[in-house]
Every structure is written in structure tokens, then in C-alpha cells.
Image 1 (cartoon, rainbow, N blue to C red):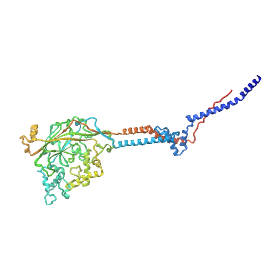
Image 2 (cartoon, rainbow, N blue to C red):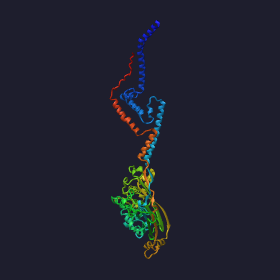
Image 3 (cartoon, rainbow, N blue to C red):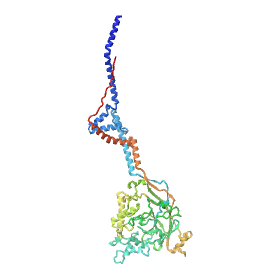
Image 4 (cartoon, helix red, strand yellow):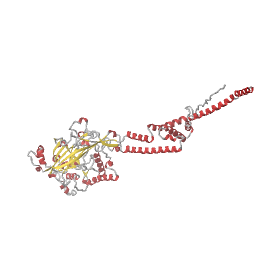
Length: 594
């Protein structure tokens, strides 16, 4: 028992002195291991106040002490890591396998390619064809547009009592022995230019015409009172002398109804535009309920509302040596602000027949949204965008006539008698007939050789507001004496006199012309934006978002990283030579063992 007590005492003494000595070592070892684990954990998720982050110190170091290449790489690495653009953040992740990086680089390159290609197509569409022509939302009434100008040219050109073209054609004007007066020579030169069968005499005295051609032709041509017998407008008989006026065309003296006055067409006549109506702006609101407007218009459709004229040709003036054996009248329907060009578009009203013309208007307007577009993009000119030299109002017909006039003057030193001209411009005589015919042919040959159209060569795009008149024509032979005597006895009496002589005794061939609107309303066309600036940005933004996930904020982010971010970082970090690093104090618990 004593032995046992001694062993217990020894064991207690050992534990009392040896174990406390070993406990601090064990405690220190455990605390050291725990501190290392804590430090490793803090290395993965650094504190905000610590510099233990492996990215930030590297970025600061490269900005502060690196060269330009290292600075750019640092900015790129930070941009890839924080950018909102999809896919690029995988480029900067260090733990990614190189195969993964190649995959994402390839995916981004393909996305950029297809996105750029589609944006290029959107740009091309916006640049080349931003305009579309659609039907208007509402039909247009015929009383909102003017009745077409009607220009009538008799095929019988001259009154034989004043000038016999056949005798002039048989005369040898080159023979100086003949006693030919200057007036006779001027008549011959003027008449020669409007007839199909003609001669080409030579000599200086045939090169130019000094006397006014309009006055000469007016004296020898068929007068209005000889050509027109009865005229009705809007189912009312009115004096045709008040509504028709003579006009000079390439066909000679013609007579036009409802066209603008020459003072309102030609620029040199006056500076002011007398009429309140323009095709671009239409009629004034105060005139919408008026019937007597300038130019005239109709409030309805049908044969009872329209234009009716009885035309006549005296048989004694028939002459086939100027034109041909086909006698009658050439008629052209055109916009009131256009100069008629009878040799291009017309329909024929033969003698002894009645022609009925049904009009169907075609009108194109342009939205005000297109005013800021360039003319070549919208393919038209507003009146304020294109100023003509001779005309106050722009339209395609007037522009083409002016272009041909300029070319003729440059080639021949003169212009044709029917072309617009200044006071000091010379008028070509019959000695220059071949020259201005060659000039017109040269213009078309130039167009054909360059591959351009007539409008491109002269820059004669259509007007942004234009109107044309399509026609449906029906005609039939009529016994005018029986028709007038039974259906229109008052007109027949005024025509043949109170003694009611036969029409045969008047020795004239009659022709009837009736023109009216087919329908009360028509569908116009409107030129508007097909692809505006908003549509362009919307399409581009949709493509960028679809292929790359880019928005406006993403673009601002790119600009920020490579401008403000780079500049501010360089200025801030390179100005600091040393960085204040907060010391890390180990949090080791103190154990006291009693």
C-alpha cells in the first residue's frame, strides 16, 4: 500500500511539473496551425482594406511602374473582367483552359462578323432607299385639284389668204434675182420650222430670225374664232375668247385653256408669282368652296360637268404640203404650271368625229418628313430646292425643256423659236434647222453612251408634288347637222345663223371634244419615309443586342474604360511613389493555464 501511494505521488508530481510545460507548446502549435488556415482563407477572399487581392495590386503596379504595353494590357484585362458585353469576360480568367478561351474568342469573332454584315445591309438600305411610295390613307376629291390645262393645236397651220405654204415651198429663196421682201422671208423661215416637209437653204440671211416669230405666226395661222365655234364649261356656255389664249409651241400657234398665265410661268416676265395656287400647296382654304378659281376646277364628275368644245376647220385652208393629209387637231392635257410640248404627248381629234375623254388623275405628294433629305435620296425636288433659269415653278417637263434649250444655245449659238430665251438670245432660222436637230440628237446619244437617263443628265428629277392625267378615249363619226339640230337647237342656230343654212354651205369640217372626270374621287400616292433615322438605330441596336448583348450603356462603358478610366488611373497611380499598406496583425489568443 505504501508502494502504491509512492507511485501515485510520483505521477502527480510529474503531471504537475511536466504537463504544464508541454501545454504551451501544444497550444502554440494549435494556434499556429489555426492562424495559417485563417491566413489562407483570407488569401482567397481578401478584406476590402487589405491588399491581398491578386488582381488589384498587379493592376496598380502595372499602371504605376509598367511601360505602355503593360498599361494597355492591364486596362484590357480589367475591361474584360468587368465588361457587360457577353463572352469577353472569359478572355481574362486565369484559371480557364486555353481551349475554352479559343472557343469564346471564336464565338465572339463570328458574332462580330455577322453583326457587322447585317449592320452594313441596314446602312445600305437606309442610304439607298429611304423612301417608299404608298397609297394615301384617304381618297382625294377632284375639287381639290385643278382641271387639266387643255392645249389644242390645229393640223391646218395657215390661212391661205395670208400665206400659202405650198407656193413658198416651190419658191427658190436662194435666187437673188427674185424680188423677195424681208417680210416674206421671215414668214417662210417661221413656217418652215413647224412643217414636216421643208427645204434647207443656205446663206447667212437664213441663220437667224430677227423679227418676233410669235407675231409673224399669229398673223398667218388659224385664228381662235375660225377654229372654235361652241364652248361649254361646267354645263354653261361661255365665251371661248375669254378663257382661251394663244401660246407658241413647236407645233406653231396653239390655244390653251386653264393654263397659268405666262407671267406666272416665266421668270423674266415678272418677279412675283401672281397666283395663290401652287401644285405643292394647293388651293387656299378660303377658296375651297369657290367655283371660279384660278386655275379652274370642277366640283363633280361626269359628262354634265366638264369641257365641251365644237372645233372647225375651213376646207379652203386645208393644205397637205405642211403636215400630211390627216387633218384634225392635236390635244394635250397637262398640269396648269407646265409648258406644253406637243411633239411628245398628245391625242388626236380627227375631223367629222366626236371624241370623248375620261380623265383619271394620278397625283403623288411627299411627306414633310422628307424635306431634310437630299434630293438624290428622296428622288424628287421641292420647289424651293431647285431653281430654274427661265421658269418660276419647278417641274420635270419645264426642267427638261430648259436643259435642251441650254444645250441648243451652246451648240448652235441660238435657240428654237418655241424655246424659252432671254431678250438678247438669237432665234435660229432655217439655216440652223439641222444644228438644233443635231443638238437634241446629241443629248440623247450622250445619255446612251454614259448609261444615264435623260433626267440624270439634266438633273431633272420629278417634282415632289406632281400630277398627271390618264385618259380613256372613245370616238365615233357624227352627223353634226342632225345632232345639233335635234339635241342642241340653240347651238345649231348660233352656228349656222338664223336662216339655218346647211353646215355644208359653211364649207367646214366639224369635230367635237368632250373632257370630264371619270370619278368623283381618286386614290393618290404619297412619298414617305421607309427607313428613318430612328428605324436605323433601332435595327442596329437590335442586331448588336442579338449577337453581342451590347446596349448604349455598353458602348459608354467601352468609351469610359479607354478614356476616363485609363487617364485617371495613370494620373492617380503614377503620382504615388509609395503605397500605404495597412499592417496585418495576427489575431492570436493568449491562453493562461492555471
